[in-house]
Amino acid sequence: MNVSFITIVSQDRLWLILTLCLLGSACSKPPPELKVHVGDRFPDLMVRDLKNKPQSITMASGKITVFNVWATWCAPCRHEMPSLDRLAGLLDESKFRIVGMSVDQDDHVVREFLIERKIFFENYLDNHMNNADNQIGIRVYPSTFFIGADGRLLKVVEGWRYWDSMESINEIKSLALTFTP
Image 1 (cartoon, rainbow, N blue to C red):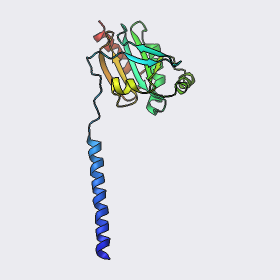
Image 2 (cartoon, one colour):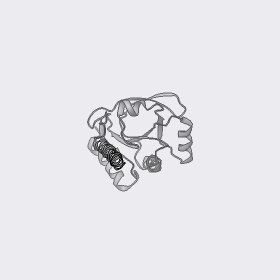
Image 3 (tube, rainbow, N blue to C red):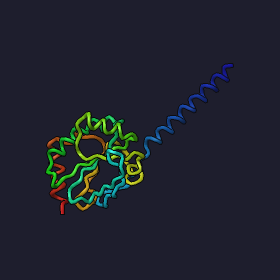
């Protein structure tokens, strides 16, 4: 009886050790690489507007584009959206464009979220995450992309920020001074 108890305990420990090793190796794996890279042209995207009608977004708009990928189910996204809206009001609209793309499946939920929080900057839908997954390769929500007037990717920020802080505003304005043709 004692031998079988020891064997069972040893097998349990062996499984525990194997499980921990597998979990540890999964955590050490680097995240997949983004499909867009600084210096490359950012792809034009087929999206849906807030009335669920197909639209095309061209990033080479002649302005610095701050492109934010978000979702209503993402707490950090919900947290940063008001600061993005305030940023849109603080930047010169002749030089800057703020664009959001929600990956939510339900356009009604997105519209309600934007209305309730009084978010007015340009927003679109990527209901099936075709752009987020296939064109951009989003790894973290929210993700923000700074795209030059010529459509080339200047910078990527993964995770949320207070976009209307003086530090963020100065950083964005310096991108415009450095990269605007």
